[in-house]
Image 1 (tube, rainbow, N blue to C red):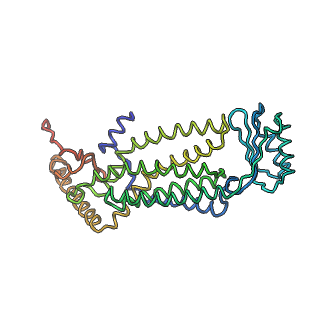
Image 2 (image 1 turned 90 degrees about the horizontal axis):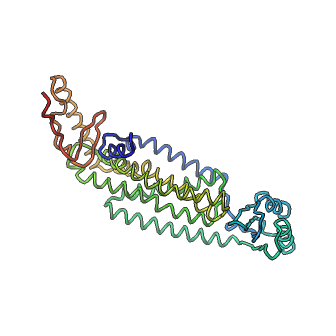
Image 3 (image 1 turned 180 degrees about the horizontal axis):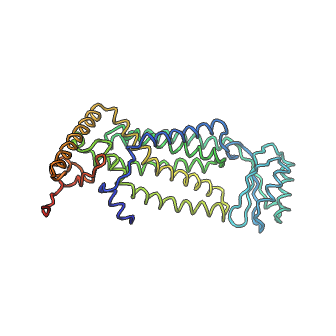
Length: 376
């Protein structure tokens, strides 16, 4: 099936994926990933860069040899660091970082001379700097403060816009899900956490909210007359909204992920730019998680919270009873040899799109079903 046809079928409801109906499965998967992330963080911790731990950095400029093995060998022998971070910056610069912070002036000078000989440059083209941990800690502190302010502003804004704290809660929980699992990925694979990583974590918050707000805006549209009809439940309207915005969410995410993936590839394999790589890596992981969370976390949570509302529960009960009555009438018409859909209620025209009852396609809710006048 062509993508356009699939998108049209999802919007009208001819085809539908059970995002909300299977929410317990998505909750279990999300909780398992969050638990794994927290467990890994607690046991292994994060691979923090020297901006957070403190250390020394050596930068070799104007070299024709940009191999990283020589720098790693020098720091392993002179600084005792078996995990020194060496990257190529641009086409003629090598940057090497070691967590060893007690090198002293004599050893630092010796390492500079070794770098100069290894890369065929004068000693004055090898810069040595000490990076203290306070700078990275200050960035983390400011980022945490900004994150808290951001969450409060988002919670208030979404509550006022959607007139529902449940939607705001679903969006906030989805944000936490994205952040925790993204950090967990870094812990599991040992990716280095730098200030650029922190910046990328804050950046993906906007992407996470974008898809969620698009879905919730459609939910608001679909559920405007929710309590005044008995054709569909709140869960049905949310599932329809997720399906209606699915293609748009995927298109938006793909057009965002592809450039980030390109930057990640170029920064890692061609340029060796550490900052570029760190920023694009966290955004690549976060964008994928943000796309999934709007469908599998935020919307199902909003439905789960809504079902604690007595009005929503009572309405769901009335819808289920009305469905049983309609099914009984259809069964009776089928037994009598009549049209099973001849007497469908007009409340099926309550919202735009299509809602499916279990095992049955109700037809467009934008317009009442037309009878087949050619039928004899």
